[in-house]
Structure formats: C-alpha cells, structure tokens
Image (cartoon, rainbow, N blue to C red; front, top):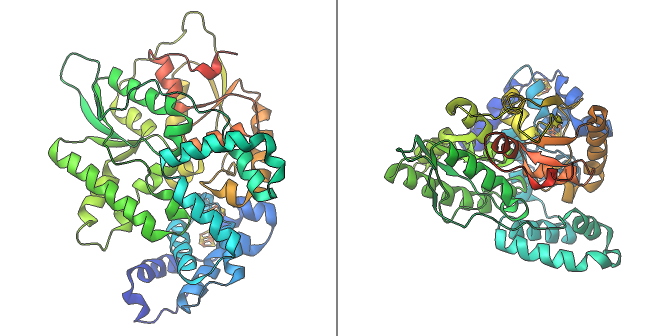
Length: 435
Ligand code: SF4
Ligand code: SF4
C-alpha cells in the first residue's frame, strides 16, 4: 500500500512503525473473510482492510478522528483473526493500537460514553474496587429494570458469585519438593480474574509447586495494563506497564526468574508486547524487552519445561467430552493453538475443537460491555457451535471468554490449567461436581 507520510511525520516513532505496516498491506481483502464484524455487518469499513484505510487516512493527514472513524474502529474486537489470515504479515494489532490512541487524543466522545469508559478504566483494573462494584451490582440486580438499557446490560454481565480464595496471599509459594526448586517463576495474578475466579491462580500455583517450581507473586502488580491500553488510554496504560516492568525486572535481577507466567491469554498478549511499546524509551526498553521475552502462557510454559505427571483413568471418574475454545488472544495474537489442546488430550479425555473456532466469542476485554449488541450475536454463534459438539464441559485459557461464554450456556467452563492440575494430582474442580 502506498503511503504519503511527510518526513516530519516520520520522525514520530509511532508513525514510522505504522507506515512500515501499511506498506506491507496489498489490499487483497483476504482478512475480511475471517473478520467477525465484517461477517456480521457486511460493511467494508467493519472489516480489517477498511479499518486500515481509515487509520491510514487519519494518521497520514493528521486529522482528528471523525464520528465515522470512531464508529468503525470501536466495533473492532481486537481479536486479530485478520492477522492469522493475512498472507503479507500485516501487524494489524499495532495499527489498531495506534489508531485508538489517536482517537483518544483527538476525539471528544459523547458524555455518557466518556462516563462509561472512564468508569471502566477506574474500576476494572483494581481488584478491590472491582470487588466493591461486584457487591453493589449484586444488590441492585433484582431491580435492574429501573436502569437504562446500557447499564442494565452491564449489570447482567457481572458474575453472580465471587468464590472465596483458598490460598493465603503470599509473595512466594514454595515448591513442594524437598530438593532445590527446579525453577522460579513469577505469576501475573491479574485484576478481574483474581476476584471472580481465584481458583485459576490457585490451580496454577498448586500445579507449579507440585512440579518443583517456586512461584513468586510480587506485590504491587495486579493488572497488566491491557484494559486501559485497549480503551486507547495510553498514558494510564503506560503507567501500569512501567510499574510492572520495574517490579519484575528488579525481581529478575535480584532473585532470578525463569519465566513470567500468564494464565490469561489477553494479558499475556500485552506482556509480550511491552518490548515493542517501550522500544524507543532509553530507560525502559531493555527491561521491557526482557519482561516480554520471559513471558509465557501457562500452557506454553508447561509444554516446554515440565514433565507433567498425568494420572489417567482416575479411580471413581470417567472419560469426559470436552470442547476446547481457543481464545483469540491465544490463537491469533500469541499463535498458540495446539499446545493447550494437546495438553488436555494427555488427560485421556476426548477433546474437540469448536466449529468456526477462529471466530471471537464477543468477550474481547470490555467489548461485551461497550458493544453489547455485536457481542451478543457473536456469543449466540459461539454457543450454537459449542452445542454441535455436545460437550460435558468447555475448556479455555482466558477469563474474558470464560465469563462471556458462561453468560450464554449452563455447560460448565473451566480454565485449561484447572484441568491439568486436576489430572496431575490436584482437586476436581468444584464446578464439575454436579456432572
Ligand atoms: S489480508 Fe493482509 S494484505 Fe490483504 S488486505 Fe488484509 S491486511 Fe492487507
Ligand atoms: S481484529 Fe478482529 S474484528 Fe478487528 S478487524 Fe481484525 S478480525 Fe476484524
């Protein structure tokens, strides 16, 4: 694709990077075929190619974002299915991030939109605030009919219960083995996940400890920053990124870290991008790059580093039929698809890919809160594809997808790590007790 940035504009590192990406695009439109919003809405501007043109026009001509641009960019899920399909290797993720930052700087959203987005940005990345919001939501749920539609939909999406934590909050969870630990890793405990599904971190810690690995959960790190990053609030996001990088790098230097584990693929994607985000920051670039290099999705880490002791044919249990939902951030952004599936297959159960598995479930961070109509249609499609498998439970590696899919079906849904923990000596996940 021809570009027309001036020399002056290309002095800006973000313009320079985006220009290189635009040049790779040959406007073939293959990406439209696998774009969920293009499939649903049928508008060229709701597909990746159209969005690339919108972003290019806005940046090249240094225009403030228009209502039209905002509408179509906001509808993008950041699912990156287009990146999997693109034969030219266009890094759409970096383009849409740049586009969103430009929108945030140059466009004044309507008052209600600003209010909602600021509220999400202020509450969701903070576990304590999110827990308080959860309690308040539970109280108002029975009378949610009095609220406007958008607020009502947001209330409906909040989980109904907040499981108790079973593990005490500690900085280091020591491996069970008497011998010297085989590795030392940091775990990103996360923000929303830590509140609504603490059992995922607990399964991760238990599993790693049982296999001789010390797990560090450094104080001061909750959110990875991706929530604000995808809202286009780059300054807030960068503050979180910077804090996380400094804490992890310090831990790496002082005590040694073999990996930084993410068990939420949406967050893992952002951590793996810290190096790119800080590429021109002389103070942070080396540290950010190291943090990105150390980051592994839990499935990736287990597959590459651990000989898992699977207990097949568990006494008093049977074989299950499992549908594996590959989160977009896992399959399209991190290019991890077969690894978690193969790990689950090692449990001796039947594991199936969901038909049209490349399509997003509609979760996409805060997307189901901000674009609820599209998200609902995507969820309906996902549920109908899941039902074709008739699974007894669903497995996935991202809390956003777990919450979204649970809103559309009563079929239990587990994190991959909960299954692996269970089949290597951990407890059976409570959610399965009714099966
Ligand atoms: S598939 Fe790739 S090269 Fe083709 S239009 Fe889409 S982004 Fe551009
Ligand atoms: S990220 Fe997803 S929704 Fe956005 S353009 Fe690409 S395929 Fe479409």
